[in-house]
Amino acid sequence: MRLEDEIKTQCFHSEEAKAVINVMFTSSWLHCRITAHLRTFGISHEQFNVLRILRGQHPNTVAQKDILHRMIERNSNLTRILAKLKSKELVVIERSCTDRREYEIKLAPAALPLLDTIQTSMEQQANSMHGLTLSEAFHLNALLDKMREAPEGI
Image 1: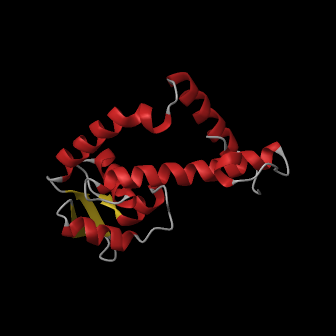
Image 2: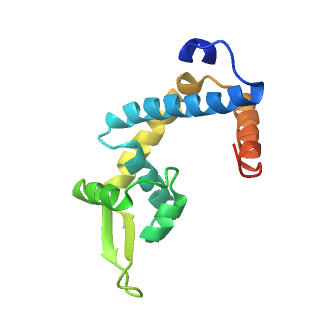
Image 3: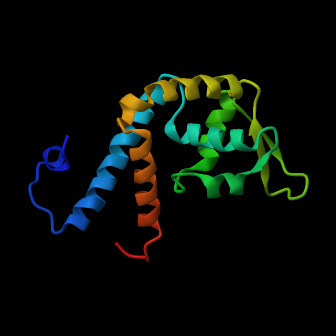
């Protein structure tokens, strides 16, 4: 559906302004769809992001501060997210041997099968979730990267 129809407006200040609003609207739309899908597995979008980061370093541990720097939503309450993942027995949290103020986190054994199941499920739904061809996805990625490389400002 067209952005104009979704937000019930017909005019934008400029095509560039429309593009920014479209990216923000689409981000929210996609976030909601992914969140709803992840809810069926009993985890939140933010919890999945942390598990994804840890899987990329598995079997090594990752410092809490390093997880925070890699998160998509960096304003998330990582301490709360980790506590929830620990209560679900999906992560192991230990105090760092080198810096007692820091924690080292790694995936618990139960997390890997869950992540594999989620990944398979998301791959099966990928086409229905965003309806892009491989070429379109490549071009969209390039455009979004270019957008983030622009100088500061809106």
